[in-house]
Length: 403
Image (cartoon, rainbow, N blue to C red; front, side):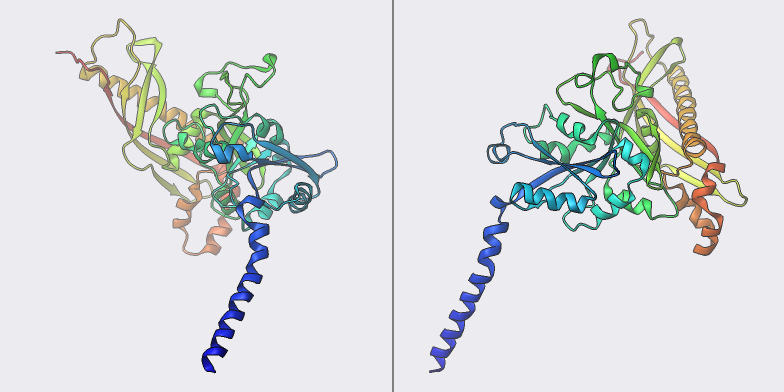
């Protein structure tokens, strides 16, 4: 009798589990979800939001073949309402667990994006590792133009496009999680990737040829099928964009953050004042930052050590003797000290935005948080003075050296 009762109990439990999970499986299994790869957010004339959702097409997921992604757009009072509306429009629940990139238009960033950032970071489906981009054009247009040439799946492109920061220094790896933390911090300000479209997607009359030192998104001379392009940094004070940094200034930023492996610079040739030398440089150790807050004008000292190899050479160049290499190293030191100093004064005097978290080094000088708050670092950063010291060791890349 006991065995019969036990078997009946087990049978009832099994039936309950089947009934409980059969509906959730049928409605929320992978085949019934629409996966969002990226979100674009624009402002409208009536203070609403234009929210664009980028989905990958089923054929690109199943076969790996290249296909254009789908972009659906909703105009709504908030991101939450936009998600609700797109769910109703598609007739299937969307999932943002695969969302890799969140794009805000520059126009919206000028008004402030704290509400949108707080909403997104509060969504459990949005990963804090999703990159944040500020687009010089409409965010919707940026999404529509993003058609990576070398990746079959656009999701793969979104997963890897910031890795170039390690070997070019042209963009940061800026995430919405970091943006939120910076937004709520007293020692630093937020930043984001600066995005736009390349020259083939723009009007030919709007194309601008620029050198590497002043290269920024939406103004480069790059032409190709990729559509979107990302060069430089969008600088924020609070939740509003206050300026932009070029690719060369982004190199300075990443070195200050100790988040770059190598980068290329063109320095004055000590042998020929009309010539530039291309040098591939790597940090020899972490950038050392010291902050003196003994008075109301912070004094910041930055010490950098680099090693590098010469990558360009004119036909009539002499073999590079130790004396000449020493002169090139000195020229590299002077050049890097100049661009680093200009970069730091630009962030402090022009933008009053400590995106390099120098405030975390200043914090060590105070016994209590209250003392640091009284010093008001974020407001006082504009009064900073900077001293940059660079020590570089440059070698030749020639296989044959002078004997």
